[in-house]
Length: 94
Image (spheres, rainbow, N blue to C red):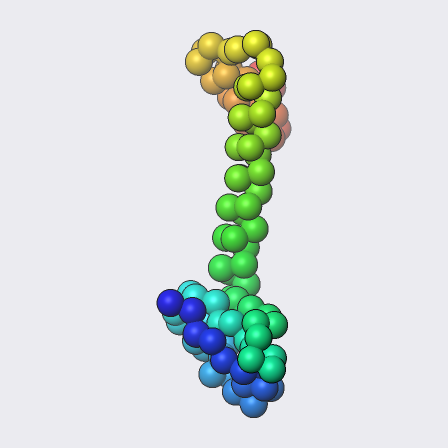
C-alpha cells in the first residue's frame, strides 16, 4: 500500500524516501496543502509502468484493427513473420 507523506518530507527525508520506494517497490504519494501533488517511484518501477502502458496501447490498437478489418493471418504466417524479424534484428538472412 502506498505511503502518503507531505512534500516537505522529500527535502527533509530524501534518503528515507529513496530507500522506501526501492525496498517496498511501491510509490510514495506526496501531498501539498493536504492534496495529492506528486508521486515518487523508483526508476525500475517507473520503467515497468511505462512498459505496461505501451503494451496496453498496442493491445488497444490491435483490438481496434481487428474490429475494423477482415484480414486474418494463420498461425504459420505469423510465426514465419516473427522468425524473419528476429533473424533480421540479429543480422541474419532469412
